[in-house]
Length: 106
Image (tube, rainbow, N blue to C red; front, side, top):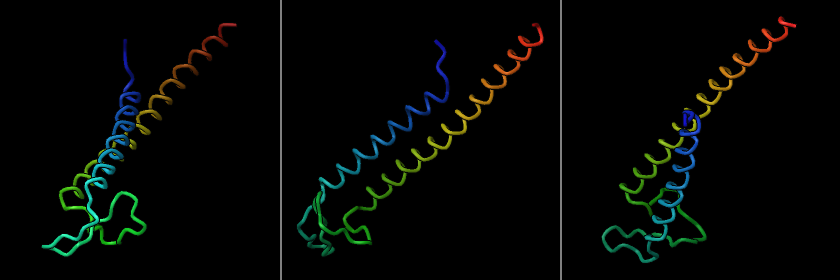
């Protein structure tokens, strides 16, 4: 059974989207509505009415985790599109040449 690279990349993209969503939910679930005594930041709960623009509710480690997950998913998406387009071109070229041979043989 020969698996096409585009189907592997598609699975990686869908998996990356799922892992990113799960990480985002876990980050928001671990956020606390109580201000941190050391920094004075208030971290919103899961359904906070307003989230600040400075992303104070995410720690630097969580921020880097989200950046890495989103970047890897985006890179896999672009690779998937390019590989699928290339496979489609190769399939179309192969099919077209077979048709031409078939028509010439008539």
